[in-house]
Image 1 (cartoon, one colour):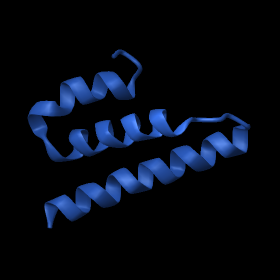
Image 2: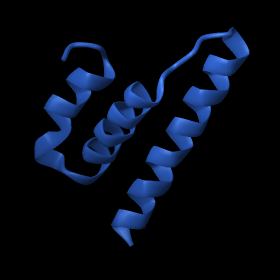
Image 3: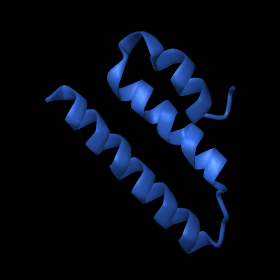
Image 4: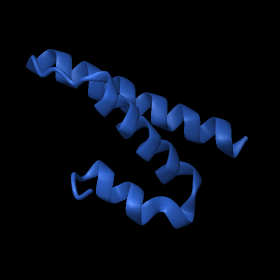
Length: 61
């Protein structure tokens, strides 16, 4: 159940990110989207991975 909730959260964030980028005319390539999606999934599912995943999400990695 928690995994499904995490997937739903990551999917919602990815959808919002894609929509915002399109609205602003910003192109985000597939590689960047894949890395962001992986970082979001790790952030929401693995408490120990939150710090490194946060660095990716905030541009610190």
